[in-house]
Length: 260
Image 1 (cartoon, rainbow, N blue to C red):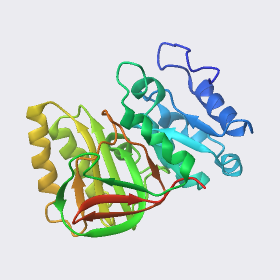
Image 2: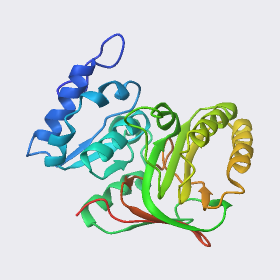
Image 3: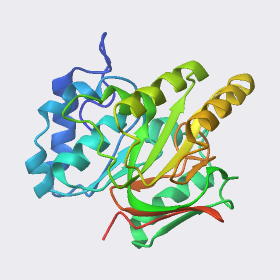
């Protein structure tokens, strides 16, 4: 357990220095081989400029989380040249009330080094634009990806398969964030788009489907929605920064292992 995991303060769970200390101590302790975030929340962007990326590069290990952790997944991938893992978190997804066997199975890939195949046996996958694309798997929470635009931590999607997921965002906000990504050039050179959970009620879900069709139906790269990745149960973990192949006939995502 990180020293400050259970601390509570007024403005955030804990202040930036304590969050950073826990992160650095975990990476620099040679007895620790994997770092799993307890939950998401707010504020990881605040510590991204303070991280010792060079030293993390010299102490490579598994770093695992999602949601607000997206900012750190991409920052560590970019500046420490490590594969990071978008996957279920300890308090949010693995507690006794919500966890599923499928969510737990996400961790098995860490111990096998085998490639991962995500197909319709895991969840119904719906192609929006057809084709085949190959590239690094990058991405995460749509809001965090949007907030990183114009900063040193902006995601690099050139030649990549882009993963997006979101929680409880209305259709107009999904529309706005996708528009922002598009106008910032993020979608210009992608090789495919993987749409994970965009959690919403039934009415908003229908509106979001129309937004996705509007954005991606005429895309020159494959786009598939319906992946149980993100704010959902089951929540499947995937490595970011490894090579992946997205196809629509059949719809599936093949991902290289994130461990050696």
